[in-house]
Image (cartoon, rainbow, N blue to C red; front, side):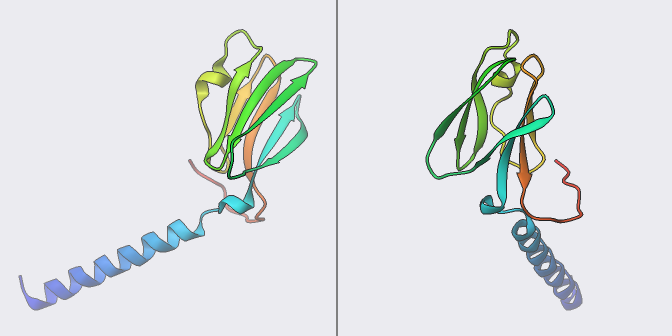
Length: 122
């Protein structure tokens, strides 16, 4: 390999590293995310992420779901629905992700407080 090849490879690696850092920094921080709890299409609760684990019972006329929220995300730990798909779904942590419980008409979605025009792709 010639000297020019090494310079080109080094330059491309530097550009790649800076791009990687920029992309990771541009994603939404924990302080800008919140959990939207919706029942039958209407938002009934907004929950912020915290450093310690918190339990939130969501009791409606359709049933009961118990949420566990910590700094890493949110998950349903107990539900009154027969299939328990929302419990089996596990933890979500990224903006745009959602857990849906059809029998209880519940949607748990992570949203951003930032007002940007970009769509989130997971």
